[in-house]
Image (cartoon, rainbow, N blue to C red; front, side, top):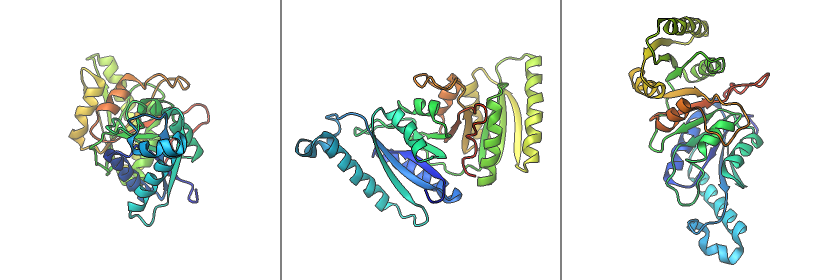
Length: 291
């Protein structure tokens, strides 16, 4: 990639795929990145009606790959963005693994995916998303089908006591600098224990100082709620949040496992885009999406 930055967008040719492409374009314009559209061909199915007629004449893999290639070309040709370089990628195999491998092969700084899909042609979005979020080395933006919020002016940053979740601060600051955002830090307590609340406030004071030194406008608050994910999602509209940054906290390697319970619930139920970041290990750094 000439400019060294690439945003990967798995597509299944449904109408909702275009929403993800639109978001990738929005980000690519700001950070001067290329956009790669990717489709994964898992298995032939009678539901893959788009290639049914050519299937008997040319063979399964060749027919489907040819039609997919044509569809990707059609999408790219309709996008009127002169300052963005588009690429296409077709892969065969398990969908989530192909996306993970594809992101590495194109050196993706960011993956843009959906949480649901109604397409009959593919299953790229939806059930495979959590596995991709779980294992991808680069951050992943997930969004619901009808979400068209591409502002990132107000970033909601939930924090807890874990060492890993505090790593989100760096990417939140970088994102805020790139998009001119305000960061809204929130810590949720599910109990009234004064010692617990005191620790949260102490942590918040350290975070506030770090963000202040970075020159980013922010708010910070400790709030009480019965369920962490619901409390965070209810707080999002209070601060007019355009996106939420979460951390996937399982150990790396178990790709069949879902992301953490609260993180998964936020990802699946949020009406605004969610940026999921995998904790770094050792000297690995996956925060610098836009730099």
